[in-house]
Length: 231
Image (cartoon, rainbow, N blue to C red; front, side, top):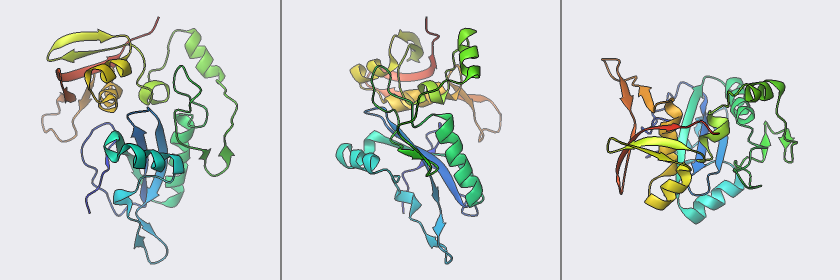
Protein backbone atom coordinates (compact mmCIF):
# COMPACT_ATOMS: atom_id res chain seq x y z
CA UNK A 1 0.00 0.00 0.00
CA UNK A 2 1.42 3.36 -1.05
CA UNK A 3 1.78 5.82 1.79
CA UNK A 4 1.20 9.58 1.66
CA UNK A 5 3.59 10.23 4.56
CA UNK A 6 6.86 12.11 4.15
CA UNK A 7 9.72 12.90 6.51
CA UNK A 8 9.13 16.16 8.38
CA UNK A 9 10.89 19.11 6.71
CA UNK A 10 12.65 16.92 4.15
CA UNK A 11 9.91 16.17 1.58
CA UNK A 12 11.11 12.63 0.99
CA UNK A 13 9.06 9.43 1.40
CA UNK A 14 8.80 8.16 4.97
CA UNK A 15 10.12 4.63 5.49
CA UNK A 16 8.85 3.19 8.80
CA UNK A 17 10.76 1.18 11.36
CA UNK A 18 8.09 -1.37 12.27
CA UNK A 19 10.07 -2.41 15.33
CA UNK A 20 8.92 0.91 16.79
CA UNK A 21 5.47 1.40 18.31
CA UNK A 22 4.35 4.37 16.21
CA UNK A 23 5.01 7.97 15.21
CA UNK A 24 4.04 11.56 15.95
CA UNK A 25 2.95 13.51 12.89
CA UNK A 26 1.82 16.89 11.63
CA UNK A 27 -0.75 17.35 8.86
CA UNK A 28 -0.93 20.80 7.24
CA UNK A 29 -3.60 22.30 5.01
CA UNK A 30 -1.63 24.48 2.59
CA UNK A 31 -4.75 26.39 1.57
CA UNK A 32 -6.04 27.67 4.91
CA UNK A 33 -2.77 27.39 6.84
CA UNK A 34 -4.18 25.15 9.57
CA UNK A 35 -2.33 22.12 10.94
CA UNK A 36 -3.01 19.08 13.09
CA UNK A 37 -0.58 17.35 15.45
CA UNK A 38 -1.25 13.76 16.48
CA UNK A 39 0.18 10.26 16.78
CA UNK A 40 -0.42 6.88 15.16
CA UNK A 41 0.69 3.40 16.16
CA UNK A 42 1.65 0.72 13.65
CA UNK A 43 -0.36 -2.14 15.15
CA UNK A 44 -3.44 -2.45 17.38
CA UNK A 45 -4.64 -4.99 19.94
CA UNK A 46 -2.93 -8.02 21.43
CA UNK A 47 -2.80 -9.74 18.05
CA UNK A 48 -1.04 -6.69 16.59
CA UNK A 49 -3.38 -6.14 13.69
CA UNK A 50 -2.09 -3.56 11.15
CA UNK A 51 -3.47 -0.11 11.90
CA UNK A 52 -3.56 0.96 8.23
CA UNK A 53 -1.35 3.88 9.14
CA UNK A 54 -0.24 4.31 5.52
CA UNK A 55 -3.43 6.12 4.49
CA UNK A 56 -4.40 7.48 7.91
CA UNK A 57 -5.51 11.14 7.78
CA UNK A 58 -5.83 12.01 11.45
CA UNK A 59 -8.67 11.66 13.96
CA UNK A 60 -10.00 15.21 13.70
CA UNK A 61 -13.51 15.40 12.24
CA UNK A 62 -12.89 18.93 10.96
CA UNK A 63 -9.55 18.04 9.41
CA UNK A 64 -11.05 15.10 7.53
CA UNK A 65 -13.96 17.23 6.36
CA UNK A 66 -11.46 19.69 4.83
CA UNK A 67 -9.48 16.84 3.25
CA UNK A 68 -12.69 15.53 1.70
CA UNK A 69 -13.69 19.01 0.53
CA UNK A 70 -10.34 20.37 -0.69
CA UNK A 71 -8.56 17.18 -1.76
CA UNK A 72 -5.49 15.44 -0.31
CA UNK A 73 -3.23 17.21 -2.79
CA UNK A 74 -3.65 20.38 -0.73
CA UNK A 75 -2.33 18.74 2.45
CA UNK A 76 1.10 17.65 3.62
CA UNK A 77 1.41 14.54 5.82
CA UNK A 78 4.71 14.61 7.71
CA UNK A 79 6.18 12.21 10.28
CA UNK A 80 8.04 14.11 13.00
CA UNK A 81 9.58 11.12 14.79
CA UNK A 82 9.05 7.45 15.70
CA UNK A 83 8.93 6.08 19.26
CA UNK A 84 9.53 2.63 20.71
CA UNK A 85 6.58 2.35 23.12
CA UNK A 86 3.13 3.78 23.87
CA UNK A 87 4.34 5.89 26.80
CA UNK A 88 6.91 7.68 24.68
CA UNK A 89 4.48 8.08 21.79
CA UNK A 90 1.80 9.71 23.93
CA UNK A 91 4.29 11.87 25.79
CA UNK A 92 5.83 13.33 22.64
CA UNK A 93 2.44 13.83 21.02
CA UNK A 94 1.49 16.01 24.00
CA UNK A 95 4.96 17.60 23.97
CA UNK A 96 4.60 18.91 20.41
CA UNK A 97 0.98 19.89 20.96
CA UNK A 98 2.00 21.95 23.99
CA UNK A 99 5.15 23.30 22.34
CA UNK A 100 3.20 24.63 19.36
CA UNK A 101 0.25 25.80 21.51
CA UNK A 102 -2.33 23.97 19.42
CA UNK A 103 -5.26 25.14 21.58
CA UNK A 104 -4.42 28.85 21.69
CA UNK A 105 -2.50 29.77 18.52
CA UNK A 106 -4.56 31.65 15.93
CA UNK A 107 -3.93 32.54 12.30
CA UNK A 108 -2.34 35.97 12.21
CA UNK A 109 -4.83 38.80 11.92
CA UNK A 110 -7.84 36.58 12.66
CA UNK A 111 -9.56 34.70 15.48
CA UNK A 112 -9.36 31.45 13.49
CA UNK A 113 -7.45 28.66 15.28
CA UNK A 114 -4.18 27.79 13.55
CA UNK A 115 -4.63 24.10 14.46
CA UNK A 116 -7.45 21.61 14.01
CA UNK A 117 -6.68 20.09 17.42
CA UNK A 118 -9.56 20.38 19.90
CA UNK A 119 -7.76 18.89 22.89
CA UNK A 120 -4.35 17.85 24.25
CA UNK A 121 -3.79 14.48 25.90
CA UNK A 122 -7.54 13.86 26.22
CA UNK A 123 -7.64 16.25 29.20
CA UNK A 124 -7.26 19.85 28.06
CA UNK A 125 -9.92 21.33 25.81
CA UNK A 126 -10.74 24.66 24.20
CA UNK A 127 -11.25 27.39 25.25
CA UNK A 128 -7.88 27.82 26.94
CA UNK A 129 -6.73 31.20 28.22
CA UNK A 130 -3.91 32.61 26.12
CA UNK A 131 -0.75 32.95 28.21
CA UNK A 132 2.81 34.03 27.55
CA UNK A 133 5.27 32.72 30.11
CA UNK A 134 7.93 34.99 31.68
CA UNK A 135 10.74 33.53 29.56
CA UNK A 136 8.81 34.34 26.39
CA UNK A 137 8.23 37.93 27.50
CA UNK A 138 11.88 38.26 28.54
CA UNK A 139 13.11 37.10 25.15
CA UNK A 140 10.67 39.39 23.41
CA UNK A 141 11.81 42.41 25.41
CA UNK A 142 15.43 41.60 24.57
CA UNK A 143 14.62 41.61 20.86
CA UNK A 144 15.08 37.87 20.36
CA UNK A 145 11.82 37.10 18.62
CA UNK A 146 11.53 33.39 17.93
CA UNK A 147 11.15 32.20 14.36
CA UNK A 148 10.48 28.56 15.17
CA UNK A 149 7.63 26.26 14.31
CA UNK A 150 5.30 27.59 17.01
CA UNK A 151 5.55 31.15 15.74
CA UNK A 152 5.59 30.90 11.97
CA UNK A 153 5.93 27.38 10.73
CA UNK A 154 2.20 26.92 10.07
CA UNK A 155 1.18 30.52 9.38
CA UNK A 156 3.15 31.30 6.23
CA UNK A 157 3.11 34.95 7.23
CA UNK A 158 5.75 37.66 7.46
CA UNK A 159 8.71 39.08 5.62
CA UNK A 160 11.02 36.63 3.90
CA UNK A 161 13.76 36.45 1.30
CA UNK A 162 14.72 33.72 -1.14
CA UNK A 163 16.57 33.09 -4.37
CA UNK A 164 14.52 32.72 -7.55
CA UNK A 165 16.78 31.19 -10.21
CA UNK A 166 19.74 32.59 -8.25
CA UNK A 167 18.23 36.11 -8.04
CA UNK A 168 17.59 37.43 -4.51
CA UNK A 169 13.93 38.32 -3.89
CA UNK A 170 12.47 39.96 -0.76
CA UNK A 171 8.74 39.95 0.02
CA UNK A 172 6.60 41.46 2.78
CA UNK A 173 4.35 38.39 3.06
CA UNK A 174 5.54 34.99 1.88
CA UNK A 175 2.03 33.49 1.92
CA UNK A 176 0.55 36.28 -0.20
CA UNK A 177 3.43 36.06 -2.69
CA UNK A 178 2.90 32.30 -3.05
CA UNK A 179 -0.82 32.80 -3.69
CA UNK A 180 -0.17 35.44 -6.35
CA UNK A 181 2.53 33.47 -8.18
CA UNK A 182 1.33 29.89 -7.94
CA UNK A 183 3.84 28.42 -5.44
CA UNK A 184 3.15 25.90 -2.69
CA UNK A 185 3.27 27.80 0.60
CA UNK A 186 3.86 24.65 2.61
CA UNK A 187 6.89 23.71 0.53
CA UNK A 188 8.52 27.16 0.83
CA UNK A 189 7.77 27.25 4.53
CA UNK A 190 9.43 23.85 5.01
CA UNK A 191 12.56 25.19 3.33
CA UNK A 192 12.56 28.21 5.65
CA UNK A 193 12.22 25.93 8.68
CA UNK A 194 15.37 23.91 7.90
CA UNK A 195 17.66 26.67 9.16
CA UNK A 196 18.25 30.40 8.89
CA UNK A 197 19.66 30.16 5.37
CA UNK A 198 17.48 27.39 3.93
CA UNK A 199 20.19 24.73 3.97
CA UNK A 200 20.16 21.35 5.65
CA UNK A 201 22.82 18.76 6.28
CA UNK A 202 22.14 15.71 4.18
CA UNK A 203 22.18 12.45 6.13
CA UNK A 204 22.64 10.48 2.92
CA UNK A 205 25.51 12.39 1.33
CA UNK A 206 28.86 10.70 1.94
CA UNK A 207 30.73 13.98 1.58
CA UNK A 208 28.83 15.49 4.53
CA UNK A 209 28.15 18.71 2.64
CA UNK A 210 25.05 20.78 3.23
CA UNK A 211 22.36 20.72 0.58
CA UNK A 212 19.85 23.35 -0.45
CA UNK A 213 16.18 22.43 -0.65
CA UNK A 214 14.33 23.80 -3.67
CA UNK A 215 10.83 24.38 -4.97
CA UNK A 216 9.98 24.58 -8.68
CA UNK A 217 7.12 26.81 -9.85
CA UNK A 218 5.77 29.01 -12.63
CA UNK A 219 8.51 31.64 -12.31
CA UNK A 220 11.47 29.31 -11.80
CA UNK A 221 13.22 27.43 -8.99
CA UNK A 222 13.27 28.85 -5.46
CA UNK A 223 16.03 28.07 -2.92
CA UNK A 224 17.43 29.43 0.35
CA UNK A 225 14.19 30.69 1.86
CA UNK A 226 14.53 32.43 5.22
CA UNK A 227 12.46 34.68 7.44
CA UNK A 228 13.49 38.29 7.94
CA UNK A 229 13.37 40.07 11.29
CA UNK A 230 10.32 42.25 11.70
CA UNK A 231 10.46 45.87 12.69
